[in-house]
Image (cartoon, rainbow, N blue to C red; front, side, top):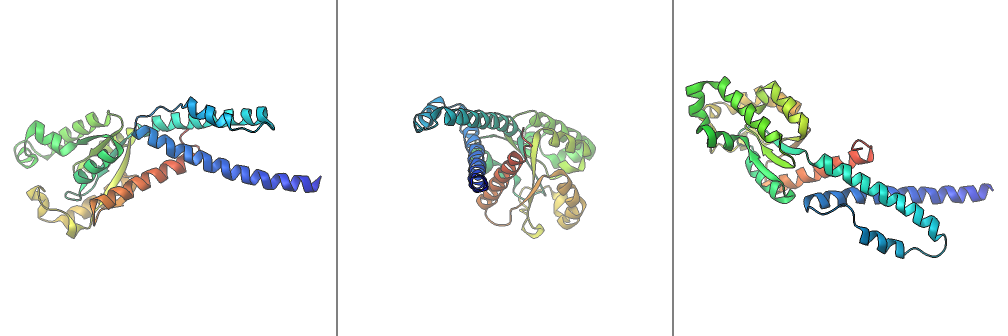
Length: 252
């Protein structure tokens, strides 16, 4: 009996490892289905697998696989709902949020929203608006735009550099978003298009906001070289986080 149990223990270890690997793949397939707008259920695929069962213990094996199919579909359903959250990019002016956001939205087939561009479309130059109406009014409108965009699902949102200066924005972002701090070395920040007031001392501005960027974000992504490389790192980090949470049962 001891010998039989030892053999069963070894077999069970292999089965558990393979089940974990199978469920990992179910999560990755679920992400692919979400991006490409594919249905979760694939009865044809399930039938093909069922037909491959050997005659030995066919009914028992069929029962086990029905449970595996059921659990895999349940995981993917929960994953679909979880992935409806927006991906939000925060960071210093000139760190590349808009560029990365546009690339990311195309790769993940999500809608793209830019709070700075929306402000300009509605009110014109932020710099002129601040001179005319004051910084507080500008921040009020910025928060309104963020709140409007955050109500969307499955989008990518690029934010203004000062979005972290209003604590209420933290609550807005955390409610329905994955937040990434796009970090670019201060001496590499792109000054083109940055408000003149920011250009005076970017180092002091970073010192003022650095802790806020970290507090608001879930992850930090460096963008010091090629934007495509930074987007690749972001997607890799995003997928790894999803897998970790799935394994831990956080998604369901």
